[in-house]
Image (tube, rainbow, N blue to C red; front, side):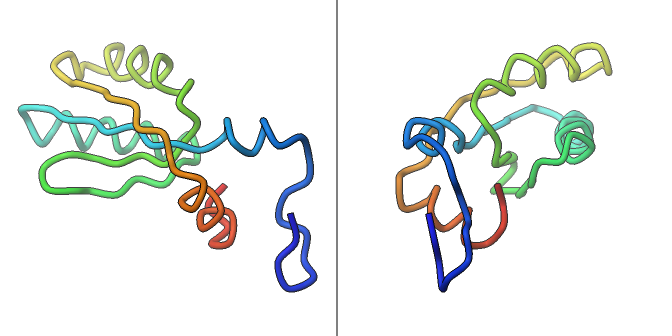
Length: 99
């Protein structure tokens, strides 16, 4: 994938389509969300607070690792939902360098 003469992505189309999504994390306590946000950021993912929850731009397979690491750190009452990014959202993420 090229944009203004610059290579943004190279590889099979299925890798591009499979690589982006969001995890939506909800918790009853803000301290647990803070803990989850720290774990995700330390792993290199972008975290966006959204109306009492977190949106984490990452591959969807990070969900199980995030749940495990959060549980080990003491965040036991969180809910993680996967949200697949649309083709447009994936393309825009690559343009922004958020991949």
